[in-house]
Amino acid sequence: MNIGLIGAGAIANFLLQELNEREQKGLCIQSMYVRDQQKYAVLAERFGVTLYTDLAAFLSSNIDVVVEAATIEAVQELVPAVLKRKPVVLISIGALADEQLLQELNTLSLEHHHAIYLPSGAIGGLDLLQNAAALGTVTLVHLTTRKPASSLIDEVIDEEKVIFEGTAREAIQKFPKNMNVSIVLALASLGFDKTKVRLVADPQVTQNIHQVEIAGDFGEATFTIKNNPLPQNPKTSYLAAMSILGTLKRINTQLIIGG
Image (cartoon, rainbow, N blue to C red; front, side, top):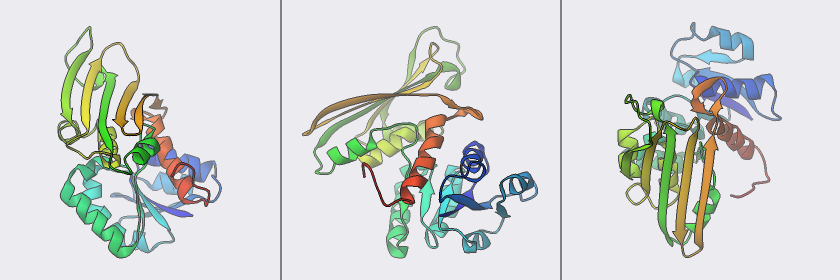
């Protein structure tokens, strides 16, 4: 499967290394859409990709699926046009808190028969949550995210501090770069206004820690994920990067586990 990549940051570089350098079976990044072709010429040389600054030319290249690995703004500006031509793996999931954009992308996906794939990002357990929500009988979804205090606030603290408590919609509005997890949870279950979120700044932790609690007719479940940073960029979750690779592998196989 030939992949087109939007973006050239830490996750894009991780995918280039894993897919083009280490040669994952049946997966290869062929094309990249970037703002500055000269700035990223080294990527073209190192990984054997073709760089494009024209979106139409990028979409006309030899690619089967597009991976958005850029920003919320890139989703808003580019993904509607992309969906008319190709299926999309969407990384900047926070963009979907804009319900008008979400509806537009859903409509385009149906009209043009191109799927939107949302990697699980920095958490797990979404298959369990979606299955439990299949009959609409999930009654509670709570997310508690604990991050190193210095990554969230400028204030020096000695003890943990709750800096936000509210809904997933409010969380992504106040912390657009920190709460993508809340959006994917909400989309998989109760929606933006019924998914509850707490964000804790903790000077004692070095990892991002997500605890998810769910309840419904099926019973109850709690799971905790402790994320190490991506070695190439400590601001990016290693598991989030790995989830994109996992999503691409699932798209490219006929044996689907946990769908």
